[in-house]
Length: 257
Image (cartoon, rainbow, N blue to C red; front, side, top):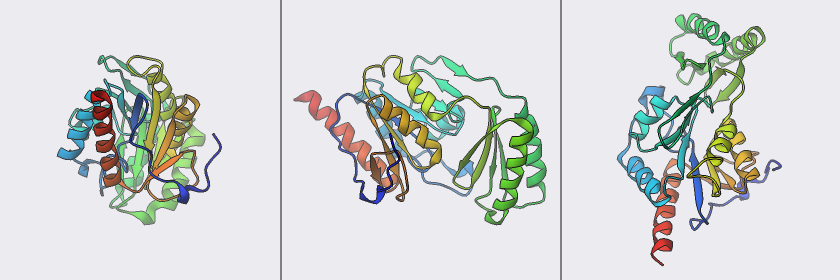
């Protein structure tokens, strides 16, 4: 699908959907951003609506995030049996079976270089996900230019893929994206044959939007307007939770009709 430059005109998606399958990003979509990754914590309302949706959609719900699976489970209070972490490099099917890509050799070099970079820059945080290395500078925005230069040098040296996010640069093992995760889920029960809907907020989610569209569904951009492949838009995390609750209610009403 061609990018949609008129995002300001996009409205909230409908709540009545024909056999939907929901794919939900975590940060900026299900949870607000926080100063540090570990500062994002479980929320009773989020947990309740995710568990309700899992039931009402007969399991056709997955969290698809840049976070690791363990972090997804921590923040969601283990409310999503299906999940994909580290931008598609980790995936857990509904039956609990795991699929993980082997880490590229360059990840260890990237972690070491990021550690050295952060050592004398207060507020810069390194996140080692095993198959990727993240450099967070939300608390040190002045470090962005130097951090970007370091990441570009490491890409040339290691062959890792840059996954830029909101105040974070992540160098990851190549080969998987949120789009490949969506496609993999859609090829399996209970997702097969459903209408995929991907909710995301940043550039890492565009692959998921495109994958959903290619399979007959659509993307929903969360946050400010920008060029995107998404068809609809929600304003913020609260709007997402409101919409998810409305979808759950609509699914019950349709089932009871």
